[in-house]
Structure formats: structure tokens, C-alpha cells
Length: 427
Ligand SMILES: [Mn+2]
Image (cartoon, rainbow, N blue to C red; front, side, top):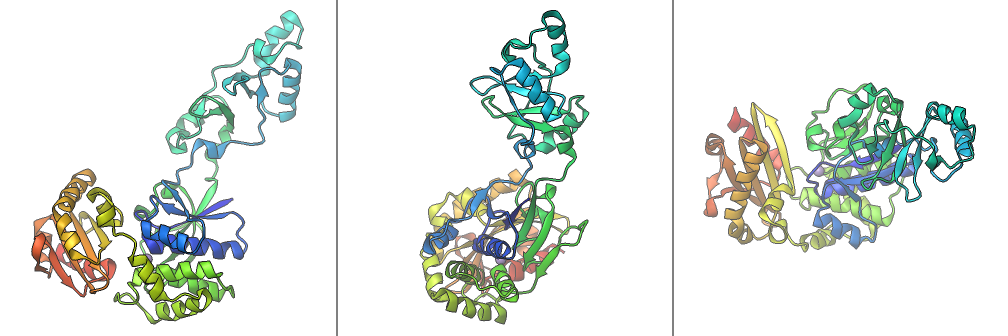
């Protein structure tokens, strides 16, 4: 069964790189079919890292909803319309099914072949050498489209008197059969979460798929599980630090590329060990990885910093969404986004556009407020743009700066520094 390793939505570098490295480790430790994916658009910085180390980037995937195509039963054969009826009936008999889907010469679905429909034909003519295309077919089966999410059609399918559902693609080409019992089965894949554990922050569709492992360095708000799962959490600066530690604990030495990709996640999340979230473990494991990779953390950070900032390369709507997290706390729903930018003048130039985009996000998501934190890792400071609930903004302990922003000297961490201030402003 397939297992996806995936970080949070609006992924940052740590989410993508830790997914890549953990999939590598799980493959080495015997998991057969495991793939790292990225929840949505791959960040430019992550693309730079995969290019730099010459490996294929993780695949961007919009969601993990189970779709009709995932339930197709490969063992159920199809009937070609040009086949003779007698051969088709033999195939039906061998399959053990009560009906089989028939496809025309151009691949389109034309109907279901079932013995009941053929009884009259047989009694009146007794001739079964005619092609299937000239025999009466069942047309009353519910035809499913391969891209339909299963949760939309499960109830209707279970109530349907038929046990066989032909599946077609968007252009009507027959792809196979879904048996009714498949709707009651567990989803055909599993998830490993990295760099988050809250379903709300995960890839859409996550709520339908069993999670078998979590590796994370955030607060824990994970739902109760039915079965034991592997859960690795610690208070460290990046999820990549935890994955590096897991490589060591398993007696596995990452390859040069994976070591470099892990370093990238560590320096990106700890802002080259400047963030207050940094721990000795981040530094120690990074030193170990540098020896394997042959490239220093500083030079990787330099390469990462050369990638254009979201403010320069994206629209305001994209920029505020690129690393935004949604919170439901103390009766308020809000988002906090973070953007890295080493030139605050660029931020001030875009402040009006960003404010308008934040207002749009507030009404689109029914938020109480939206906070955008723009962080300069070089200077070790952030500035905050705030829209919405005025009482929260007034309660924040930050001085007003130019361009309508609040100054946050020494503040680098959304999770450890800004979020607690917002929570206390809310209470
Ligand atoms: Mn992280």
C-alpha cells in the first residue's frame, strides 16, 4: 500500500525537505511504496535546493482525497464490443462476476454485459456467435467518473442495487470497474506527517486517510488514533533535525544529497541558528550532516537567500498565502503568515497591496484578523502588518513603525514569539 510523506499546506522549506529525507529513510528501512509529496505549490527556495543537489523535486499534490480511480479493481476484466458473444460469456463466467463492462473500438463505455439480458436472445435465436456489439446490453448501471472524490458518491453507491460500477475518464473512455464493496474498504493509501500534526494545517483530504507516523516540532493537537502510531516530537529548531537524528538512530548514513537537503531545512527554519527556536541538537546534527555533504551550512544558506523573495516574485495574494497558518483560538479564527525578506524597503513598497490582499483573505475565510510577519533573518528582526480586530492589535506590545507596520526587534519565530503575544492579546 502506498504511503505519502507530507508537510503542512502552504509549505515552507522545512516541510518539503523533511518529507523528502524521511521518505528516503523509510525506503531504506523497508517501507516498499513511499513517496514524499508537497501540499500545494513547491516553494521557490525548495525548488532551488533540489536543483542544487541534483535530485528530482518532491511532487506537488493538491489533495489526498480518495478518488474513484483509486478503487478500480484490476482483477475485473473488460469486454470488447467486437468479441463474439460466446467468448464474452466465457470471460464473464471465468471472472466470477455477474456482469462486466463493454467498451467500443474507440475505448468508450457502451454498456454492461449480463446473462439475464441475453436469455431472450438465446431462446429466440440460439446463436451466440454474433459480436457483443449486436447483443442487448444493460445500460442502467451507475457510471462513475475516475476523478470524482469517493466521499461525494459513497452513500449513493452503497444504496444502488448494482454491485458493479463502470468507471470512465472525462472523455467517456472505459477504465475498469469499481465493486460496491470497495466503498466500505479503508483508503488505498496511508500518510506520514512531517512538520505539522494538526489536520487543519495538513493537505486537504487528510481527514480521510489513516496517519501512521508523525515527525514534528510544533505544539501537539493531534486527534486520538484508533491504533498505535509512531510519533516523534521534540523541541528543536527544525523537523529536519529530528529526521537527521532518526537516520543516526537507525544506523543509516544519508547520501550526500539527502544530507544537504536536511541541512537546508535546518538552516531555513532556524535562520542559520539565529532564531530563538534553535537548540544544541540543531547545531550538532548539522555539523554531522556537513561532513557527509561536503558543503557548509553557511554556503547553503547563502544560496537559499539568493532566491527571490515572495514579495518580489509573487502577487500580494500569493505572497500572503505562501506560508500562512490558520488558527482557531479563544473563540477567534485568524491567520498568521510569515515572509522572509532581507530588504524591508521592498516590504514597505508592497504594504498597501498586501493590506488589500489580507482584507480579501479575511472576508474569504471569515477571519477575525490576519497578521503578516515579515522577517529579516540577517538583521534578526520582523515587522508586522495587521488587519482586522483592532482590539487585538492595540493589545500587542509592539511599537508602530513606518508604512503602518509594527516593529518587532528580535522577533523571528511565529510559533514561539508572535503566537503567544497574540494569544495573550486575545485573552
Ligand atoms: Mn518546521
